[in-house]
Image 1: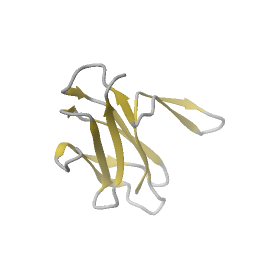
Image 2: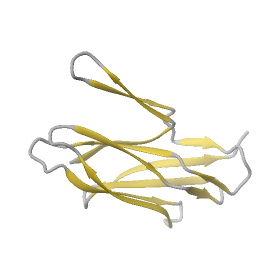
Image 3: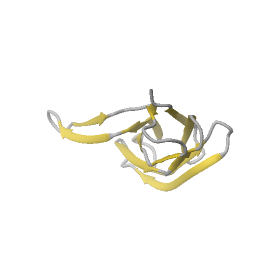
Length: 128
């Protein structure tokens, strides 16, 4: 199994396409946002992780997402079983309460079992 994409989003919708095909509509994909509130700021953004499973793979893995601030300190973690039917695609939404004490970036490090990491940044900016 492998991670195809990992993104912070506002919405996710599914719709049927022609034949047995399904479309996933992702809305509000974001890598940064301006804070509407003074620091510190806490949010629980949606992180969607899209996974592919080969026909010859077992389809079971542990999905581990670890969130780190700019200093490299772990600020949140999620670990959960992930199952995808061989030859298919799957997704998982991960939500963690993230807290920014200062403006900057928190990075989500996503991996399946001990596989390679996919790193997704989310940066808090001052409002203008």
